[in-house]
Length: 454
Image 1 (tube, rainbow, N blue to C red):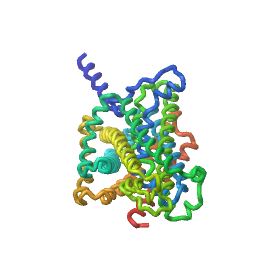
Image 2: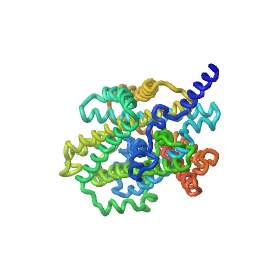
Image 3: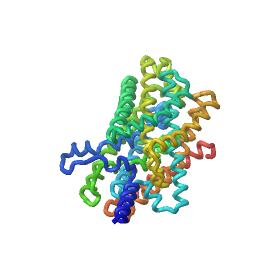
Image 4: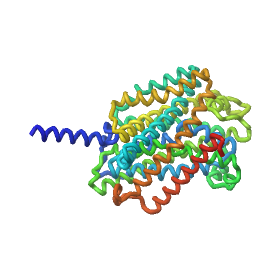
């Protein structure tokens, strides 16, 4: 009898350990019989955590520079990038809902121990690279807002582990609400600044239609590749496959699974549309304020200063615009920090089955990410321009890591064995492979360009 009891406990432990983000997996009840809007509200949340990765500080400079250099013509590139993101994130969510496992767990199951360890290292480094962009963005925002030395700002951002631990105790819905609030701040700031900038609405709408100049103008093509290549973040694919499981559903019930896929996809598409709007606003702001001014806008500090310089942006120049920009940058960095932490836990547990307390996992990954930034900051005496160079290298590494996430995702979601009747339809599979090949080729091109090899 005792042996049976011990076996039962062991089975329960193994079953629990196999769940992705065990502390929040299936923690949110969904109504069995409710109207469309009530059901959608219940499923709304994971999409906003995903969308954060598509509007993080790493994308800001590229989008604003695209507008400053080429007016509104690259809006069509942002539109295409957003459509690709919607396709891949919908596949990621469906994978988690149907299989009950995240992308990291499935990748580990279908690879050898050595390959699994290699993929874990690559993916863990990608999380660090994402963290670096968040740390730099947040630290520079703190420097701009409070005139605190950037090295101190970097250390302050390291303390966010305490904030996240508190949030996890409040429940996953609270985390979703807080991130949604931070995203709302970003949206409001840039909508307000774009409104003041007075863009030409007709030209904006024309920008969403493809232009042959994108292919014939080498500089425009390179920046277009930068926008597309940096859009899909590897960690978002792992995150999406996991947090889609936070809603409690009966996977033995075909209709329940079908409903979960439907509403999770709607949520994802709505929130990624929001990210599309934010990225469009960034480019529109760059075009309306800086196109034709020949301003150097390669850094956050440049943008901050330009918004209060009447010689560049005209009569709307104001210290308030600069401060709002810094507030949005801080909100972006902090919201990205939350999603980066969750992704780190998913990857560590999925690939190497290492279950450690969240505070220890967060402290370890944060220290690994902060260390190179601090070393850089000390070596260059807190020079923002030099520190921001790390952003370039972090984006390059994310490009390297992308195929290791996107290829398994397409393979698994196309597998009848894993997905059953919910595997990719033919058009989805072919569209996904096409997008995958394009993204990989673009990222290879960007890497070669970055190091001057092409």
